[in-house]
Amino acid sequence: MTTSHSMPVPLPASRRRPGLRVLRQIVRRPAGAISLCLLVGLVFVAVFAPLIAPYDPYDQSLRDQFQGPSSEHWLGTDDFGRDVLSRLIYATRIVVIAPVVAVGLAVLVGLPSGLFAGYLRGRVDAVLSRIADALLSIPAIVAAIAIVAVLGPGIGTTMIAIGLVFAPRLFRIVRGATLSVVEEGYIDAAQSIGASTNRVVWVHCLPNVLAPLLVQITLMMGFALLAEAGLSFLGLGVQLPQASWGSMLKAAADQQFRAPYAVIPSGVCLTLTILAFNTLGDVVRDVTGDRKTS
Amino acid sequence: MTLSDPVSKTGIETVLSVEGLRLDLLGSPGQPGLVDDVSFEVRAGETVALIGESGCGKSITALAILGLLPAVVAVSAGTVLIAGEKTTGAKARRLAALRGSSVGTVFQDPMSSLNPTMTIGAQIAESRQLHLKESRKVATEKAIELLELVGIPNPRSRAAAYPFELSGGMQQRALIAAAVACEPQLLIADEPTTALDVTVQAEILELLKSIQERNGMGVLLVTHDLGVVAGVADRVVVMYAGETVEQAQTEDLFASPAHPYTRALLSSVPQTGKRLKPLPIVPGRVPPAGAFPQGCRFQDRCSYMVPSLCLDGTIPVAQVHPHHESRCLRIDEVVRSERTP
Image 1 (spheres, rainbow over the protein chains, first blue to last red):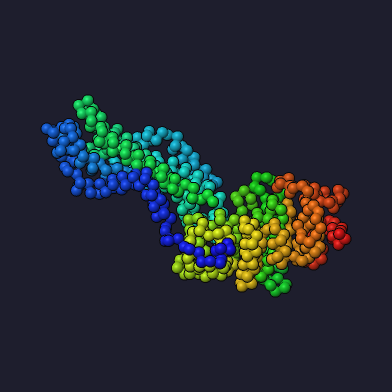
Image 2 (cartoon, each protein chain N blue to C red):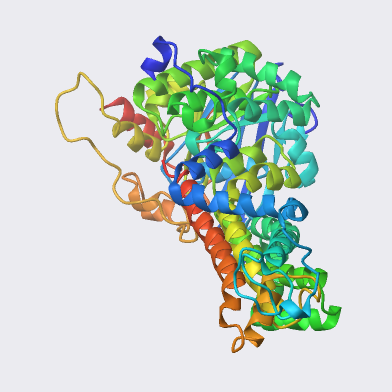
């Protein structure tokens, strides 16, 4: 106190927004930098797929079935003689869009309900929590299959199904985080200056539950991708001739005795991407974790 | 004073009036109230200290005044008037409109009372944006002025700082700036200096005093620090086990306490210049809410207790002399013993 009164206090070099600060801290860690690069790279590939892909991913040539890697087809061809590399590249569009839409839907449903349940407690919380409990009692993949069965197969309905399955999980995390934030003095302080319920929830609670939420969103992206691949593998997700890593894996697995190496490209892509999501989630958790302890 | 008239006989505005306030824990019928029969007033420009041990009901009384009671506690009797407006039983929206504009609040722990994700300036500007409908820009300019007013150097860059970048004393200054942003008539300060070190405490109290002289607000100071009370309070309200037990002008109370509890509290304050002897303590503990005894609530710890007198019924508040009242049946004995040490 005495020092701060008597001398001019040096200011931080720049006043960064907290979001940027988190991003910088993520990039500073090798694991964070690598996984973030990989994911940003995927977005890049998805956007410029037509420019990068050497062939049309839907171009069939039954004469060129099951070719191994060559200078013409770097990753070989599949059961219809289509270029595997081109299909992988086009499939990244699904990889980029599916988890974002699915998790976006989960956030849309789970975030407001979780915030209000945690803040208002009482009857609102009881009702919402029981609904979430009921939804969580059904195994995720079974619930997703049931939803797809009702809505019909396709990538759109798959994303909706995954989003709905994740929503109660997200609700619980947000509710839990909000319950602890509500105990903080600044919530009392916000109420004491006359902030409305809506304002307290969105302006004062939300930013403070964002850290655990961000971790979960990152991890859920990985799960969503896995779930999309799983459903596509079962033939419920992406429909032919469109490619997804899951459906490519399925096609390759069906032919594994004729072309055993064919499972490798899509399998490796899937594994690496999910690994990247999970690693990024861990890094986000480490970076945002103990900020509040004083 | 009538309820509708905020101006008392003296012609000074009463900014807070608490009348016969009783708070009950929901779902425990038949129990004595958490807080019972609490009455006091705060006038413009005046500092009233609300004192008592932990668990006496000071903070819950302050929350009741603000209309921020936890869901399990309810006002079951009595009225609270802020600037002449009745707030007990008022609609939540009306209460929210009063908070921040008519009554500002400073809480105990400055670190936890500031939102770690918002800049200091935004938090001070918030109540002006809410109540005076100022734009973010105008309100932020005002916030910078307020930071300067509360004695924070470099107010412009401080306004853009986050709470963790400030020391505890500065955080409390910022909170005071936020509490008085809309120039409320009443400031409730709930142990504003407890979490701060002693030199900072004095600065904060001085700051409150100077703001009060500037805008003439009434201050309700909730504290258990008698040194603070002696330094800044005009009047003192002593609470014990959910009741007000004594009220008086500060000098009066310190000179001739008329309730055994006040007397015991005062005698347990260390003083310089006296011969070394063990500091007296008040034996025993405050009974927990729900276990209040019949009769006088201080009976177990009182050296003046007479079984035939103190163990039955409710003890009424009696006038010692005008502006000095005590909830004791043996006021004369207490006062007399004080004069012959």
